[in-house]
Image (cartoon, rainbow, N blue to C red; front, side, top):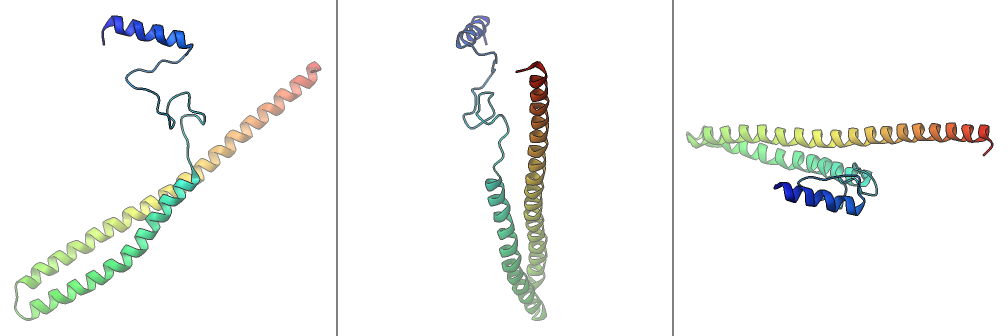
Length: 150
């Protein structure tokens, strides 16, 4: 960025009356800029719950359905091996890897679900703590106002 361009941007910011300066980006209209109506961090419990529920549904459905594939694959691998086909060992190897990958996906679903559940709880605690702090400040302010005779 050239110096003249920088000076022009600073001048435009002063004309807008903004005390804030943003470099290399515009404010995100959905939050993240200082002018967002709800601040920088917005957590919607409904959205978190929907993602957590989707992770739980994926976990339960995939756990059940993948078990059918696992059983069929191992059964077919055993049958092929018993009949002397080398392909049986290969299918057994693929089925074993399938089980590993299924477990990775199931673990990820559990991680997502529990993390979002934890996030909701922490956010709720933060909200309650902020509310309690602000309430105590307004009570304190009210006491000072009464003392002054307002």
